[in-house]
Length: 252
Image (cartoon, rainbow, N blue to C red; front, side, top):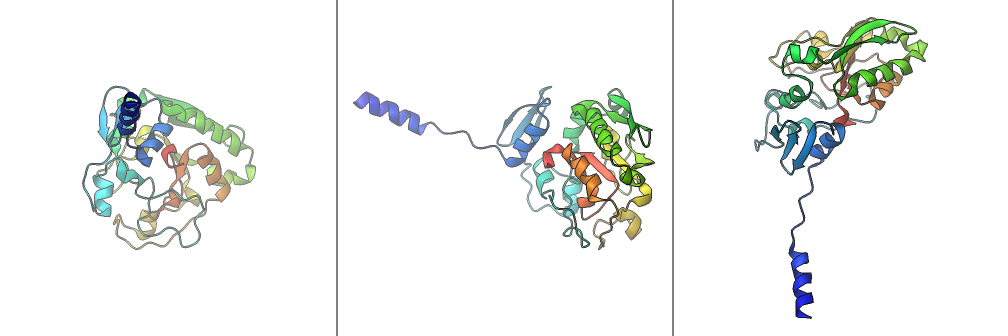
């Protein structure tokens, strides 16, 4: 009896591992080919690189979240399921604009040359438009954009919003910043600029503190097709960019 009691006591006192933060769980699910291990405050990439989840810095300003984020900061704002109304999103509610760039550079490439090595040309809406765009093969983004393209090709009433795509791969920084654009990785596409609204165009500024009014002309049906395949939409940001779709399945 004492031995049984000791055994029960031993197993009862074994500490259970802490549950992983929701953000880490989302990243693991979104990028299983790259994240091989995780604990309560870090992820380990397949090449052995370890990224901390929380850098311990609290009360960051919105500008600091953009310029000096950690992985945890990326999930500061939830990506809304609902389509925005005429009032748009609350001030600075930009799910996806806060990006810990070393993580994405580790997956897609640290240089323009590294990214280019994984690019593939696909035909955008081959039946109705037929534009050629360069996209990355990493994370199967090329296959996902082909699936989106095929689905949208069956909806000719949406053609005007999708023709003359504004661009996919282009290694560059975001205007008015030193931050690398996600277009640099070939996992982002801008659709027809003619029907698009971008906060910097409308305020004629690059000031993140500018008071903005929401504008959008892109139909909900277009957005739903992209989201189904893991792309978030810049029209669900306070700092709206309604032409912009970016492969970020961790938010979906």
